[in-house]
Length: 107
Image (cartoon, rainbow, N blue to C red; front, top):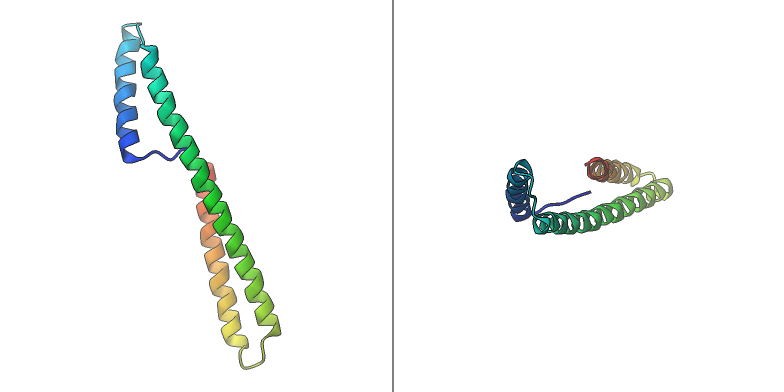
């Protein structure tokens, strides 16, 4: 996963256009390619950190669902409705975090 900052996107696009013009003239500067590679490398590292953070959030949400289900199973009759609502909320949050992970993995 790559996570470019807006400045990196602009810089990379500018370098790509410059490289494209150089490629048409058949004299591509290797320093230009190194700069693009550096931008790509930093974006890949940032993307991996963000993906790891999403994994951590998903694991936390899974644990929250498990805890809420255990609380619902052990709740008294009067508290069962509130416990059921907490399970629904926790499951909804888990679905949101799983969708975020899936979107990040596919991009």
